[in-house]
Image 1: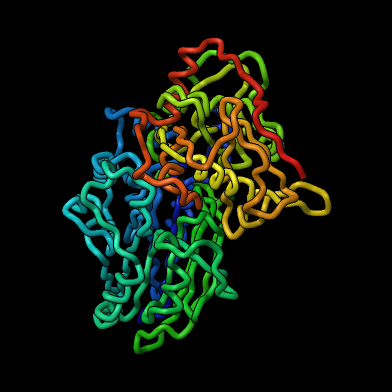
Image 2 (image 1 turned 45 degrees about the vertical axis):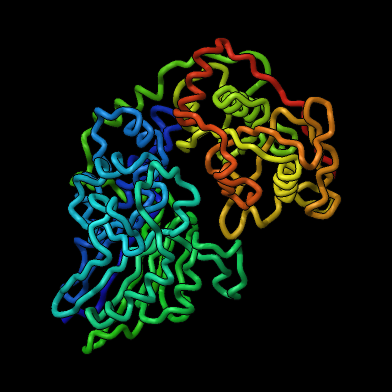
Length: 518
């Protein structure tokens, strides 16, 4: 008789398959799908007769690493490479993450074409579901016990993604989807598992909101307002979480395959869940299972591609020695990204972010590796029409990134917890501006000029930025898709490559347009 169900999950692997972060050709790093998959296979192989082990791939699999950038940029390559590996691991279901759509539906269909498990998308609607989402849920029966897996994707995808990448797909709130489907699933199955590529919008202890309430993350409301869930798998936020909320076990296994989420359900003779545990299993020391190892041919091609020379730069150093200093004073690397964006969409103002504290900037001699390690997202450059008032509002949002503690400049904890949002602080080129962090949030922009003249409230300006920011992403509601004037055809990493090739040697410049008082 089946007594236990173990539910294993990976999420937000972001194309990191091998144990490397690609920072150098021969560096090994304790991460990757091969390590996570090896752990999953070992647990499955060691399972007892009265125990069922299920595995779910919870989304954001096919985008985010130099390997996936190579696959997207080389249509002749094996674009189904990743799902050939996941099929060997033995997943029972997969979920679509928001980044699955970054390269368009055609690429997504190719990427998913070799999987041997269903992709679940209960809250996706439209004819273009064909080939990317097979069904709303999966029913598995083992030893007389029926287990349902309901698959959900963050409904906020259309707020980030280019319409051409979504076709006619529509995304329903997971709350209305779950409320509609869970009663019938409870009648069809003994155990109901929800796999959700999304996270939690509130503190899991106090229930206090930790971010603006949207359809991006609805996990807290899901578990506190909709009954009938026995286990919840989450992702999207890249957090390391395992616990119980409202009696329901949940996991969120970080990113890049560094952890596998494990939920264990214990059943009584009537197939009811009587107890549960949840934990994260580290993968760093897991030996690689040869049965899931692919040929090294593609990885060798990727490493060779990344090692291609792009020339060199002269002038100011483009190495990032201290991320906080770079954000406080600006940095030649960020000025370079802004120059690329301005050149691509013909503006003389631009904004960009230092995405995280692991970015190292550029060495003197450059390769493709330096581009993709510093700019891992397939964003487009966008020219957006904004008023002087809206520009000031955006700068005030940037200024809220900082706080003063005992006379020292620090990052506002809201940009670090519950998940890092360092990518939501921008530095501008083409304007002169000043922040005074001693002043209250919302009143910190003390100086703002364009072409040596004060920016007025109704003045119209064209600003280059990435497409995520241009639609308001990152709590910038003053920006909107309706204000976009034009956008690049190439991604920003590819624009950076072209710009360097056409400006050799590149003359790096230290910015002098921004000051910060504290």
